[in-house]
Amino acid sequence: MIPRVRKAVFPAAGLGTRFLPATKAQPKEMLPLVDKPLIQYGVEEAIQSGIQNILIVTGRGKSAIEDHFDVSFELEHLLESRGKIEMLQAVRSVSDMIDVAYIRQKEALGLGHAVLRAKDLVGPEPFAVVLSDDVIDARTPCLRQLLDVYQYFGASVVALLEVPEDSVSAYGIVDAEPVDFNGSRENLFRIRNMVEKPARGQAPSRLAIIGRYVLTPEIFPALESVEPGAGGEIQLTDGLKHLLRSRPVYGLRFEGKRYDAGDKLGFLQATVEFALRRPDLGGAFREYLNSLNPPVAQ
Ligand code: UTP
Image (cartoon, rainbow, N blue to C red):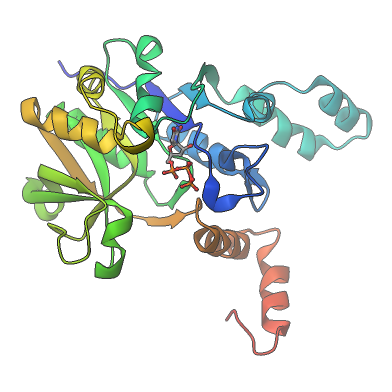
């Protein structure tokens, strides 16, 4: 029987240099998209995908994340006494949402190193990894789509996004062959190899790995055998390459729209599109955008 995925690891210990100075004292995962921090979108996606056991790898600004998912007695008391019941519910739903544990990554030694820090809490079972600066809007949560592939093959699966030729060198790019799944050969691939940030013209495809993974526990010894690269960093892609030697790894071109909210432009795009879609804000925001000269929203 294929074991169920019960846990999701949220690496949130990166330095977030692309967002300085906002990320000097708080992790970029706490930047608010409209009115919720990025990490909450990721946690909600995990919950909607059937995972409630959340492990957050923290670095600087650990307390902001912990406080966010904790009960805030003072705030709840204040809202209650002022009769702000809707706000009270919004605040409570955050702390009621999850069973959360925190792991410390003392030094930002790479995404692979951050995942490895979760080894003892994950144990010998499959698990998900969610990078919450990749915000994904999809009818079926992206992580759920990956879990469906995992449930079928019992193997590791990464999320793939087709990127333009001139962006390949910003990603890990896969060399992969299509596989039949759900009556089509369009979206699922078996990965043969992967290259981290290839030069333009050297990439084996335009399929980039983005921040959703379902991994079998063999990834831990694979990560342990990776030699640290520049700056002592251990990359998850290198761990996956090791894993590929002994286990199949699949890639799913998921259905949905991904925003790179760890980048200023991507963050702004996500902010505008999420705000326009909000029933309580969209109308007024669209009106405002249209009042700009020339108008920017239809
Ligand atoms: P990024 O590659 O976006 O790096 O990390 P970063 O340091 O966060 O941001 P920039 O590039 O300097 O602006 C991808 C994910 O891996 C986590 C980050 O928090 C983010 O979720 N990460 C990265 C860690 O948890 N630890 C690390 O050592 C590196």
